[in-house]
Length: 344
Image (cartoon, rainbow, N blue to C red; front, side):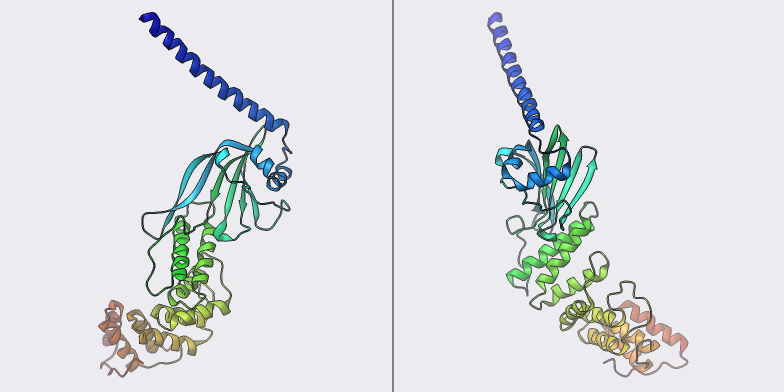
């Protein structure tokens, strides 16, 4: 019996050794083959050849490729990176579309270390970015891929009220990209905010107020590229029709345009004041308090303490605590409290 067990153990060890050596020599063979047929160890030359021919892509891919995609985080309007390892035989070719020039617009090459380079492909837009990581071992070979697209296959948030199906998806897609951007832990943080803005603008294209306000607000946040002033005004005007915050944003725009810092005097105090009054008219407690402050100081157009008090009182009714402080301040500085007139 002991001899039988010993023979079985020896046999198992031989099988494992055979498998290991087979894998080992196979790996060496693959590496040697790649080196012998390498288009070029100059990466700029290699990349053009790799992108141009499917056969080259199939040959210069590691046996297991690290693939990152975005997956929905629970049921929220958030996504997170999800990494798997995919056999080269299961990859869908072509992996990358032909690159005409190493300096082609939308193509960025980033050096990770001495033997690792990453190609960032933005040619399809900020919402369709893909990255390709190559390692040099005999020749360059694809090691990993990242797909930063958010599609209906990997993102199914519940539809938002007061939005069409298309508007809702674009809006929540924009929110998902914003969440990724605010995490501040990805190499593509700038591009993620750009993707967010792009999708907010698309969601607002049919006049949705909430999407318009989100697009304008992100543009002014400094996290995404600034929209031109004509577009920014259009978005705020759309939002200001029904949203108090939209009217407040429009007031800021009339004063400072797309200047995030809000430097200098107000450029158009009359229209800024009218927009701010409209924010109060739409029910904003903060807007009513702000109108009161401007009426009290006269920093825009109107200086009227009686209207200021009326606005403060309206803001207090709506629950604004700053308006209480403003009323108390007037009481302390006035021998006799002026009578309130009207806010708007």
